[in-house]
View 1: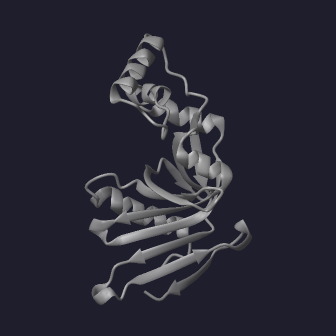
View 2: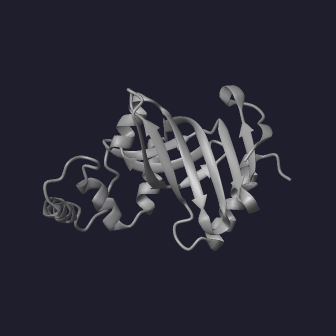
Length: 194
């Protein structure tokens, strides 16, 4: 049995990628604004390792506003077909411009153009307005590469707590909790009652 939460996550994530029918990298991202008002939404994991778990978004979005005011977040992976969950909590920081640029360059052209066209989380009077903005971006970047917009980039959740939850019969679930005090050093491991 491993005592390294990242190795365990890698093993579970590989099983999810092989067995989940859709978006094994989908995770719920919970944030709270400066007043403590919580919000949760689904995002996609785009990188992970001992330094943390990375997702990308418009930095003018509600989630980005929340993180600017309160740089803490929680993530939840729910792999229903495997009857497993992974919960992650910790501080959030922006990834480097170079890392954001590299990921942005890997996206489809339409996704790149959509990042320029969208004012994510802001009111939209009609879908046709967004579609017109998307067409304008197609014209603007016609024939060339689409650079990363300055308002778009990545965030990294650096875990301080990682819980692995495994479904068991009769709700006698298994819960393994890894914690790291102070943010650096070794992980402590323990079990939680179901």
